[in-house]
Length: 569
Image 1 (cartoon, rainbow, N blue to C red):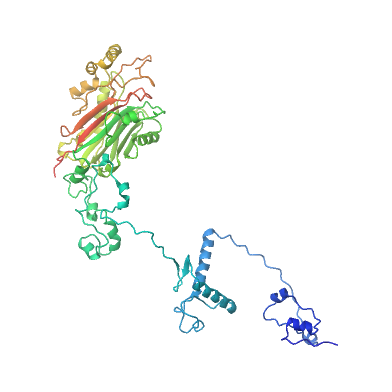
Image 2 (image 1 turned 45 degrees about the horizontal axis):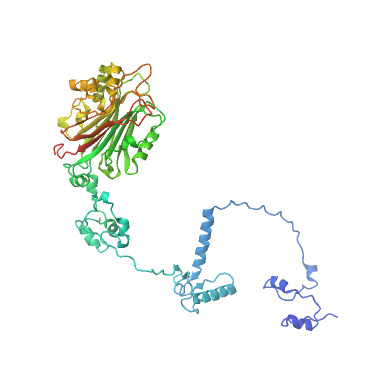
């Protein structure tokens, strides 16, 4: 006899006691049942299946899986950030809810709300957990009523040090001490220029013409706190006479010249060396660039090379490594195997104008330009400089060819181009050396000694007691300069060193080959200035330690004075 099913309200234990013989589902199976199903199963009536008509059903094949490309790291990061923003948008404050929404008005103010989405029971649990989280204190970060994450305030352990008017802290005073050797470089006096600090108002900045009408005054206050402002019209009016004493509108003039060079003198180092095309460079260049005789380094270094090494860049790097970080390469140029590099002190680079260079080839037959001239010019504090390095025709008896090389150079060297001539009234269109205030000409001029080798070796064998005046009487260059055929207006410092040509490579002996060439002063450094006495030779010597070539480098140290009246206004 069929038993009546127990009522729906009975529990599982009561049903068991009532004698319900049906198999009851387990607790895990009950949890998996959907919420819309009842506890009992109801079957359709018996005549339902007989009266229902079934239609044929053809199953469809499963769809192919959709292949998607792998997301990049940026896309994954963007998606996570978007999900985070969407979750933050669900946290809505009571004050930001619309007046028509009455579903969340019963909650206390100041507690984060969740917008109604999805299961209502799950939202209630989330609200309950958030309400508990808002009541517990946090040490890291927390959510404010404005729904923005904020970090907890960090309190300083001690008050910050007081700031002085010159921008220095007393606690860091030991780190800002000035070396005694650099005591001349005093910081500018801030009493002369007003300090545009945070106490200045926008109206005050506008009254001093320090801020434009359409620019932010707040951004200009910090920049004017330490540096003197420069007007745009002053910057745009700068010219190649920058640093001159008489040029109108120049940003650098007599005040800067007096500050850096109180005696109006700068030190210039000029060197020339025929490297004989050797690939190997000397291990150290200190003996050449940094001789031990002067106590201080020079302000400018100019090095001219003839028959330079194949790797010119490696040579320039070696020069920079020797001079160190206090110097920068102002300019470097090449004409075949003729090289010239100019290095300047880093703090003086701003006082130079645009640099120009030109070349002249004296031997057109040769494909490799081994003979010719390279010239570089610029202005420094308003004084125009011209540096020329040359390699003239070789040979003991080819004096006339060397004179032709000189004449071709002064006529064909097209300098200056854009740099204005500081004194056009004393310039000559047929001589490039007359267009500049100070000119240095150096190189392998190949002028020889008109004397037998035996006589020259006998004079040089006397050692320290050698009287070089007898050798210089036979010098071809000095004779031609006295006659006025070459280097008109140029001077040369007294020579107190042995001939720089021709040595055996790696040895201190002169040519021991079958040619037995006569030692000669082929490498020279000469100079010319418009005003007498502006160039003073401090030292003129050769570097005997450089033995990688058959020539010895020759260098000169000069003191160059800046004239105050080099051109009319």
